[in-house]
Length: 319
Image 1 (cartoon, one colour):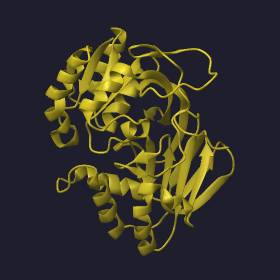
Image 2: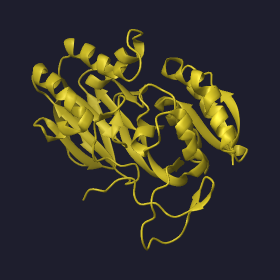
Image 3: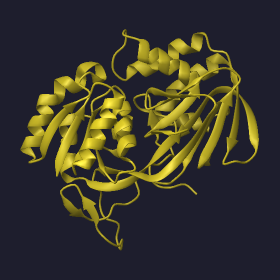
Image 4: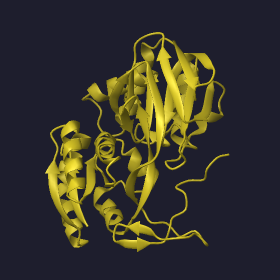
């Protein structure tokens, strides 16, 4: 296996660039042939990923979730393989997969992991790997992306605290799976392919990456003080137990709002409302940590370093 190491050296405030020599040293120690391809932009990352797949190489994204999502989008319809080395601020995709957040340690997954087909979310014609959200989250994400005051994953908490001051509730219109249209006054609509966003906020605690469905998290109107008190509970996923928070499961949802919003996904703007969000089951072949085999399961799964036993689901499915 040859890795095309697609790296954003400025990810995580330069974290990826600083860690690159140690990562290369670990890849060499593990016997993984590789070459480094620095990115100039997300579009350039997509070009590099397609070139890697065309050359029969594994496209290993080393940066934040935005970079990983761009690489996944580029190769999702090519049969290519995605490798993940976390180097950004949030690193939520690696977190949910159980990939070490230290990129040097994560190299071991590229050497010993197995290749599994994971879902992608889609907003109109663009795809994402984690969670697409709008409303209050749009404001918080914009603030987080613009600030130079706070570094690391705390930047998302900072964005949320700053956003609450000027927030006014919005009326969202949603249509789930082409069914009944609902009007919801509130804070946020989040379509979750994965559990986490914002550097460890467990917005959708029951979402899984291999079930062919989205978890739609709706945070309805409530007093600001109550909403602020709810924010810390998101890190353990306990917010879903509170009144005013609703979770639905769906394959697609149409979302519009009473005022303009940008939908964000994987930390970056992805589309302006109105949007249609859907799921692409099994769209991206990804190297994930190898788990214990399921007793009685049939057939091997092709591993990054050779055949390995089949893995159990990434997380228990809900009925």
